[in-house]
Image 1 (cartoon, rainbow, N blue to C red):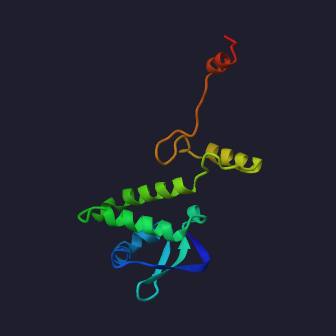
Image 2: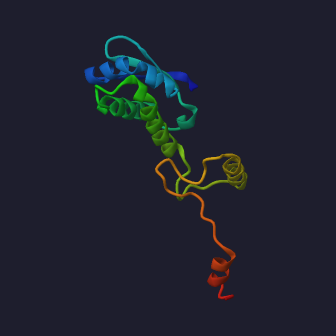
Length: 145
């Protein structure tokens, strides 16, 4: 998590507050620090560094809704896949999107990180991020065959 310079206050409805209390451990594992501030107000004190540029209130609401929608009889041993799904969703929101402009140094850093990673060939939703072309395919594009 990344501490916020100024905590963000958020009003939770009773259902959201109950979900926050019930799943406080899971919310914490995601990198959020959220504390009861009295009445219906809660204070977001830290957010996952991965999504530090995303609206923390909207992200918290989405996480609480995902956790609330999970089956009630789901055993606690199944929590990690649920957390994994939420992390994948957070990574997707934080990812570089089509049309985003990157400086050359940012592009090189991204390529360096991808090369060092073992899991860079697909986005969290399974779409490929790398395509390898054969010499034959490239020659065909330029009418060399």
